[in-house]
Image (cartoon, helix red, strand yellow):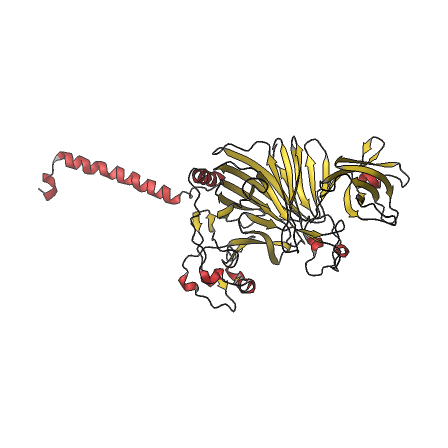
Length: 517
């Protein structure tokens, strides 16, 4: 009898049962190894944003080392990412990503991850990815420093070279380019108390997830987590490069505390001077990234408000039952209007916000600040819903953000080309202002030069219209509206509204200008 033959019958049965169990476990392990990694999507970020909103605000990120924070502007610019280290370059994918180093103004790191078919991985900081130029620094002591932000590259203008396409850098700021354009205005994830409250709060994108594109991808998906003392949020950006690059934005916001002004889809730009506010000593005729705010209401009205550089902060708004779109636009695309061979303001993009679905009642708000030069953004526009969500409740919204060049979003009939102000031959009274507004568009081009076009002008606030007329300008083929107005109370703003009409047909958008106090 063998040594095993004396084992109890129950033990033998247990050994026999163990065979099928082990086989089943092995099969499950094989299936688990073969199964794809769990998908990562917007709901994952939204769950983090909701949990984050239920906790007191705390930015869990160590600041940049002092030697980086102390860098001068030129020293910081001397730190460059090595292009041959770009994310996805080795795989020869259509999109590539390069990262911004911490330093100077960008001293709080963001966490960046990659979403790949085999799962989510953190992208660590590696000093070998950067060329530090002439700087004498000690990166070996920094550890996993994190990044200030990132930029995406794509063959936007020619197949042989990947241009910059979109940049996420600083707070919740981002900006993008269409073909042939140069960076100008920016968008933001959220604006809090730009007007009212205890001062503006700037939420931050604290973490990003970059979804690895396929070899033939023409769209890039980016997820972002937003955080601030009074708000938390999840974002998805689907970037579609093109002549007019489009970013589809989906967001879910949770408020930690009430806010005075909740600004959705904010845009920020620079207006230093232009034809409606010329500079006395600068050789350039105009200097601005955007020249006006365009608004399309849900009722079908189109509005145009020329931007200005006020002496002090100046806030105006347009209330409506629903919104079709709004944007800070650079309508003047002629080099001769700027004469700046370096800045090329005629190539700065316009940004048009197109809501996905109804946003309900609210207002488009425009905040304009004084700037002493062209280095500061001083114009902010955003949508304010009539009712902000309760604290802790989700607010879902989505929109398409169009980054446009010469082919701009326009009203269908006619639109403002330029607004000029000042006297002609005749003197103006001390309390008088004169405006010259040119319109163009298919509705106007179809009219004969002798058509009885009427200028319909009103001064709904603090103004008296002294004279208005409309006529065709032979040299350009455009139609001109002349307006002379008296400001009734110099210490109060004067609002003006005007459009062109032919019989009962409204030909143009409404020019909606305002004279500051």
